[in-house]
Image: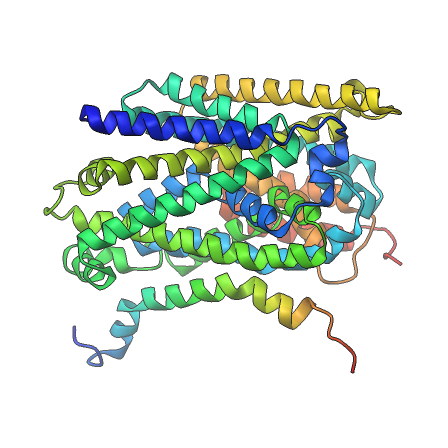
Length: 465
Length: 44
């Protein structure tokens, strides 16, 4: 790397850090309460809601993981992951009216108020806590390894960098997460758009990219996995259900100013997310088309991009990945702390007996301590665990879907009783499918949900009035 | 293989176009479901 390129990268990092500090710092209020801290007092405007929805959607793992898969596997990555994730968007609008009616501050609380069983709150909060910690570990790992490779810095230093950004933006609660997400989304959209245009321009246009792929590697234009359509469709459904039942998105429906804002947020966010995926697809496929000998000979993902892109555009891509990692990890960290302090241990954190503003301050201080503790634990785990933890990450989303998908979207008249037993049965079934039958966690989700539905419907208990 | 000579093979080769169409349908899905399924219509 030339000294000029290094200087440019350092200046870009510095500018991004400064803007994050300024934006997130504005969101620290004197009269805070949990209503403001967890849900932004349910007053987030459309622009903040769209930014924080898109920011939390685009993680470093999905930005880099998907692009790398598209680069290596071609269109099967597009079908299974992009269309799989977007399948979740079909369901989300149907949760809006239910969530807007509730006065709950968290999804575990919503679940227990809707179905009248306090055990559901503890079970789902514990599932969320574990799922989010694992996912934050993945964000740290992915970012640490990528940045150390790109910049030549150590993995330890790189993950420490994202740790600091994430802690700082989460300390102010949802208002600070939402404010920093405005910057993050602008950085992600701008960086990826410029990088995609640069790659497509160098490769000679989208049609040329497809021609080159068809000539040199025709297997990349196949949309289905080698193991068949059923394999691809079950993976798609698994990821779609994961998105549809993920509290990261539902909490943004709850925090929007009103129902109309929540609906508009979903409509606009899907367009922005769609555009980002178009860019990522062309970055992945275009990079592959360029790797057939002209710009870079070989199959090295990073080698292609560092050769094909100018240092300025390469830096923009790098900062976009940083912004994607920060914007997802901070919202997950906030929800993990909420699960711990508000849903799992309200008596320890002082959340149950808060009577005045001082008690409320103590409760929010406990939240901030837990935010720091969870982030530190995740950072240490990211150093200790091997990358095989990615497999456990896939397992964690299935667990979240088992807790929330059917209770949120089941179209027939719901029963109040029997849900806890059904969720427990689905957990056991899912574990058996994964560890005994050997199915991937996403594929095991669909049969597990079928078992959950059957146990719920056929267990004794009254119909809902 | 020229387009039209073997229709089944042609469809298989161009399934990625169907993939893109499905993608755009999914991007529009929230708008379609909100306008056609969820939004209360005004009474005349």
